[in-house]
Image (tube, rainbow over all chains, first blue to last red; front, side):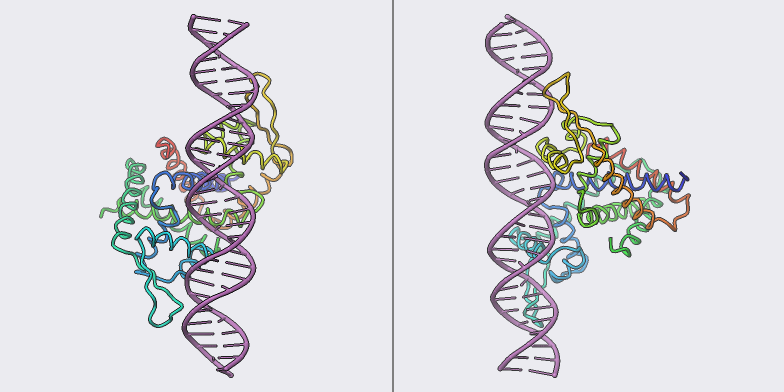
Length: 145
Length: 145
DNA sequence: CGCTCAAGTTGTACTCTGCAACGGGAGCGG
DNA sequence: CCGCTCCCGTTGCAGAGTACAACTTGAGCG
């Protein structure tokens, strides 16, 4: 097997390990926010609000799933539904202050965990690793994986 | 923010994207084998058989979860349970020929997908990316994430 | 108006998961 | 040998996450 082949095998294996671990640890690390909820809140912050359908499309989730997730987030007071004056079918989802705060907390905790794991990496390796990941995900995006 | 900080932010973000995507796509890509089942079969192949408790400990799963997964894999004919002659509490799990075959098929399909995404990467980048991932996961392992 | 489409909700079912309780065997001190 | 404790695995139960299908409501258009 060529060196490239070996490297691809390794990448596949390590990515799988990471995915499995992320899935397993997400619940334990952030009991207040599942990986999906975290992602949805992040999306709302980034876009400063959007529709439920947009979330469903962007994350390849069923609209019923998003509906229930949003219901839970609303019950928890992290998200607000605002009727869209231009289209009464639509509800615009917005982070509440509490939602913004929780999101910031979880992000901070995640950041600390990553930082600890990466603390002894040389800066050059960090930036290269970051570039590789972006590149990989951009390509996977295009493949609509 | 320093360059290292920025890189860490990016790594965190991209790893999250990857984890979410892996979770979402696993079911669609390999209907016959969930990510967990795939991992368990892989472990059995690699170790040439082991106990259910070992799987649970290694993947931070509850033993009941492993028990049910193994039951399903056994029903599907991919795994065999063999009583341990030295300790009647223990059952040694072994891949069947069918299990080995399915595992090889799914691995092959995953490999093709990765290969396609990485086909235009220079070999040097591939090997470095692989090294980074191994290093990251090894550290996360130590943190028992 | 009436048809069609879009946004969200709800009913239903299934999977994955963990916790708790249990059964059965192993190992050990008396 | 007996009884206690620990370990391995199963099962009952509950909860989260998800998808699919049917439905409600509203928009757009001829």
